[in-house]
Image 1: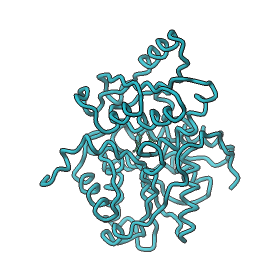
Image 2 (image 1 turned 45 degrees about the horizontal axis):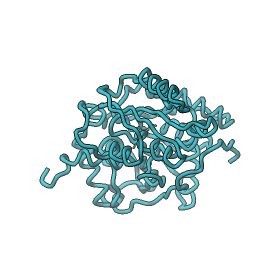
Image 3 (image 1 turned 180 degrees about the horizontal axis):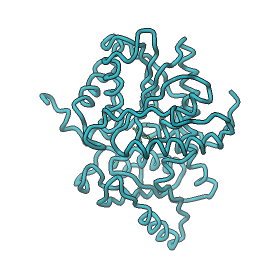
Length: 337
Ligand SMILES: Cc1ncc(COP(=O)(O)O)c(C=O)c1O
């Protein structure tokens, strides 16, 4: 497959493993099950953002920035992975983190925010919902740093939905399809947690590039309405296709979003997600997180139980990481609950 190779930092461990899930498969019946281990991208407890930031942060390196400023929620995987790559690049990270689903500032650092601090990031927590826009605060912080003689590189909210983030997952689809083929499997469906949308967008674009009919089922984790997700997926995949110099295009009909497992809100567990988190741990020793990947496994399990896939089909869970966020949810998983 001739695809333009975009510049990347070359950090992390790729390709990530692609493994069968025989015990979960035996438990559920029906299709063959696989997992793509993007929880193992190799830096500071991994996750999908390591793949994406490998392309996005090339510009920071080119501009010789000494600070990267970004934003998300207090238990943000994006921010932790930005802080990790910044550390490896010899830059400082400044994270403006919104209280989001936790509503109050943390009394004690745990999970991702603890790792942010350990990784040497400057952390600023603000009372703000995940749907609100902190861009003006990022700009103010950048200005303060410029006045002190620093060269900040701002990764605003748009960075996480950018064509580069999407292109990273188009490459990931190619990587995964090749691994699947080596085991004799053609993927009929993949399940991925979808929030802002570029990870799913990239996987759909990758399937289009390879002319594979794989269904890429984006599991809505409740952060954004479906229309916004569809819009981001269309725009970012169009941008990524241009960057990759491919004629493949994602159309509205290619976008499958399942919102049935989102529950009440982003970051709020459901009965199904709690069950799925324990089920995949107890059959495959795979640890997933309550915010993204447990809802994704819940959707996959729910659809298999409903008979949506048959024996002989190949289904893959794309594990996008997020494991550090499990620990702040410890109360939900105590014995007897
Ligand atoms: C663990 C995990 N999975 C999936 C996603 C969703 O990625 P995207 O924002 O590309 O939809 C994120 C990021 O928000 C994440 O942290």
